[in-house]
Amino acid sequence: MTSTPEIIMYTTPWCGFCRRLKSQLAREGVELTEVDIEQDPTAAETVMRLNGGNQTVPTVVFPDGTAMTNPPAAKILEKIAGN
Image (tube, rainbow, N blue to C red; front, side, top):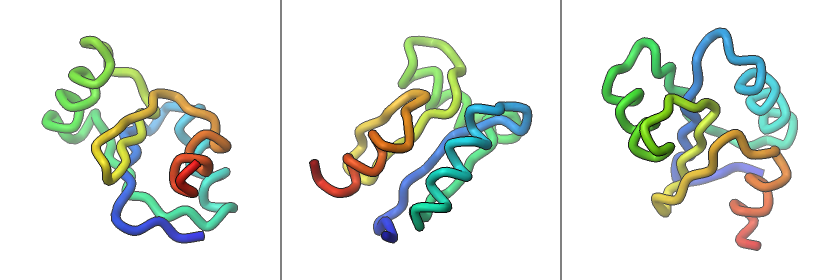
């Protein structure tokens, strides 16, 4: 399963939840763009806006503009399948 257009996952290098989610989605064939909020101040602002001022990762943003914070892989798979 390949997602098109782009899914963005905001992360940090030290986030274990981010690494696990990225690995689970890769096993399912889900393509995404990973953005490190510690390296990109604009991305950090986006994450804070989506999470009530908190820099909570992983935050996943879908092409339709909706977002999920620290979601299980199954919820992302449901979303991109249209369920």
